[in-house]
Length: 55
Image (cartoon, rainbow, N blue to C red; front, side, top):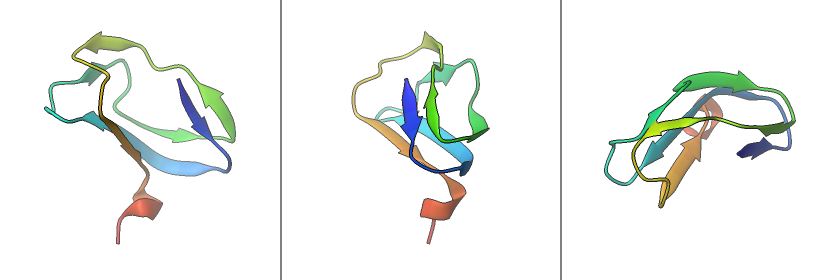
């Protein structure tokens, strides 16, 4: 589950080994929670960011 306090543009979820396969790789997200299904890979050490986090 991913949670956002405000609108997030182009959310990306990756794991430490870059072997994570999700049902949706990049998505926009309204405030609240969203469930993303994991197709393959480990969910430990996740990195979640949006385009607004890139400097």
